[in-house]
Length: 316
Length: 162
Image (cartoon, rainbow over all chains, first blue to last red; front, side, top):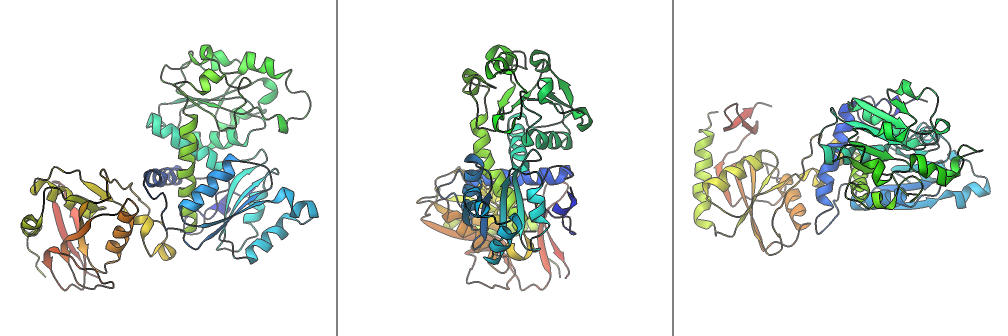
């Protein structure tokens, strides 16, 4: 897959398709810009006129509530017009191809597409076919990437831990099926986190994951020792084929984050989760709602980060 | 062209503002030069009200042409804008477009009782009906003029030929 499509000839961000290949300076630019948008969302009028008159299409070929809503709020706070399309329910069922759908919407003068699709590479395909003035944001494609989720995670880490260069970060759970994990790994290594661990049962850890610069663990207790940041993943039942896991109960016993397990990490470690959570499967409620959880700030920061991405794209 | 010392211009501006001020006025500086100047004026005028700063990047009218400013800083308005008397401060007044953007941004925080404008340099060349109530110096300039901070941390106006 071509990643260089996302940077234009002036070195600006044209599309956001994946974290892979983006320079650290670009990631910092997005995070810095997001910081200014956080202050906007705390005001009486939570809007700025930056994208007035722009039409942003949320193209969701796969169901999503949180991601679609936060993109919608972000676009509205930038004063753009947002059109939500749940395409699974309409054109696709009538047999229209992905590119036909996109061509039709381009003819309606779209300025930006936010794309969520069950197939890896869908956002790339759209980006390679749209006119040069149209920008594409990948809001999750199959098992491949979910760059804005990773960016909001990085924003949250920076907010609570200030720097990346002394952190031990553990990603826990279903690495195999997770586009979030892949994007997180690229973001963390690009931003200079010296130790990134991935913790999962053998069946949920892709072979060769260590080539991405991470340390694999199969034992949660060992993997959590001394970590500063825990990135929990959702167990993706809907993407699993065959018997990768004995049962949800057994998964919780070995890989569920309980207060006892969390106590093995640093005392000031923070716990994150991209949502939606499976309480009692990958995370215990007392941890999800506990003092070390920053799961709700993640959601708030997610809006500011998406505002930053959209305004950087629209301005390039 | 020879400019007076920047320090003298700042002092002249403070002197001009002083008699027109009440103790309840809130100073707001526009990033970056205006924020530096606002800090100096806040000290010189002995105000105890909190100092605000604005980054007008999200309100610029040239976003379509030049995109987002590469170094946006958060705006910080640590007081209730509703009913406040505000003295908006910028380093150089030229087309008036920055001030237009700043006023629009302030109104997204609330409805101020009044906004007045103080600038270090009014260089002419207005494209909008915006005027400074207070100016350290008024010139008719062809070249660019910038406010910088030198290595000693002092403010310094510098002319930049076109």
